[in-house]
Image 1 (cartoon, rainbow, N blue to C red):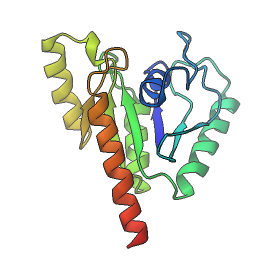
Image 2: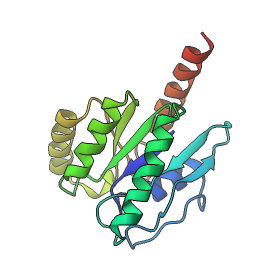
Image 3: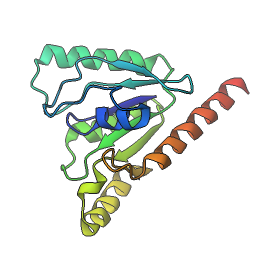
Length: 170
């Protein structure tokens, strides 16, 4: 299971909500995740936190290194699902759509998760929902702060893992 998205989208906060407070380091400064961090779940699975793209102030060489690490992870065939996090308040960038297309081209199952859902008004939620549904097959709205949508996300992750295990074991 991989978690990917732009810097400052809330990957670490979401991982802390899913795995338990303090599992992942959070920061207000974008780009603090400087490698692929692996976390073990209570069920014996592994979550990979990928470095964010976009706002991090890092060298081109460091970004290329991150891309190489991610490519190796996806090429391993061990990623059951990639959770692509999107902040619906931030306009989608080419990097968001490129990640979606990259995963699709490699046959990596993906799920779009709209983070920071609690920060949106009802009107903004409706608009964001329509826009994201047009860009992604499946979208789950969540809030790491309030817990909204977290149980739905957990259930979807479990379902995808079980489905993958059934496919592997026949």
